[in-house]
Every structure is written in structure tokens, then in C-alpha cells.
Image 1 (cartoon, rainbow, N blue to C red):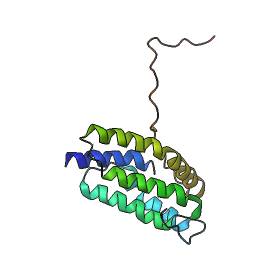
Image 2 (cartoon, one colour; image 1 turned 30 degrees about the horizontal axis):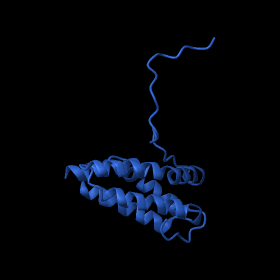
Image 3 (cartoon, rainbow, N blue to C red; image 1 turned 180 degrees about the horizontal axis):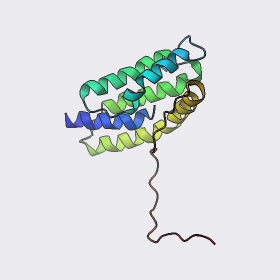
Image 4 (cartoon, rainbow, N blue to C red; image 1 turned 30 degrees about the vertical axis):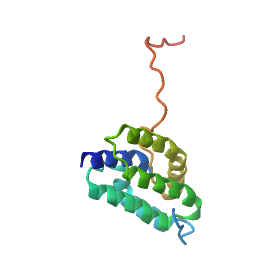
Length: 145
């Protein structure tokens, strides 16, 4: 149960933010509507096995509606979320794989987020993004003056 909860939390990172088959909806209105309805599930806290399953199914459903413009990046995100849902995060190797999945998802997540903002008027990007951890300076920087 704990591993599922951890996997669920990991799905939130992969969901960013946020299409398998592509839809007939050329302008994406159906996709945008469904994305807006599912936004909380796709980017909110997930802690139960039922919520994990619901999130994976939401990605798949949206994939069936995704317009051609984001079909490929949505399909990549769905595949990554499906894989993340199977990880046992109690295992160190699974945590490494989850980190890799997070990095792998960044380009697709950016593509989908940009499209959703421009087409649907939805902001899918989280307040923070996953990325390389930099070196923290040991002394404060001084202002140039």
C-alpha cells in the first residue's frame, strides 16, 4: 500500500503536468474540455490504488481524444505514466527509474503544456519543474554595483 502511495505521488510529477490514437476533433475542443475536467486528477495528489488507476485511465482516455498536434507527446506521457504506475518505489532501482522517467517526460510535457495554454487556455505547468540539481553556493552572492 505504501509503495502504491509513493507511486501515486510520483505520477503527479510525471503528469505535469501532463495521444494514443488521435481524435477527429481537429481544433481540440473535446480534448480541451476533457483535459479541463481531468486537470485536478492529473496534477493533484494521488494516494490510493484507485486514484493511481484513475489517473492512468484518464491519460489513456485523453489520448483517444488528443488532436494530431499533440498526439505523439501525449502518447509518450501516457507510456511514461503507465510505467511509473508499475514501479515499487520501496526499491532503490525503482526510484532511479522514476527519476529517469521524470527527465524523459520533460520535453513531451513542455509540448503538451504549451499547446494546452495556447489552444485551451489551461496552465498545466507546476509551480516547480523537475530538473538537474545545481550546486548551492557556500557564500552569498554580492550585488554588482
